[in-house]
Image (cartoon, rainbow, N blue to C red; front, side, top):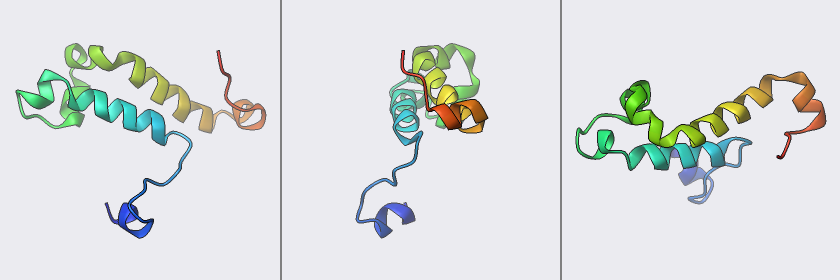
Length: 80
C-alpha cells in the first residue's frame, strides 16, 4: 500500500504484476475466501478451492519461471 501512495495511486509496473493481480482477483471471488473468511494464501494451499483459478495460477507460475530462465530472459516470453 505504501508503494501505491508513493506512485500516485498506481500499481508499480512489474513483469508479472498483471498475472498476479488476476490470480488475486480470482482467488478473492472463491467461496473459500468469501464464505469461510480464510486468507487467500490459505485457500491457495487447498487444492479443491484453487482449482477454480488454475489457469491464472499457471500463468503466474510461467511468468515467474521465465524471470529465472536465462533463455527466456534473452529471447523474451513466448506467446502462444
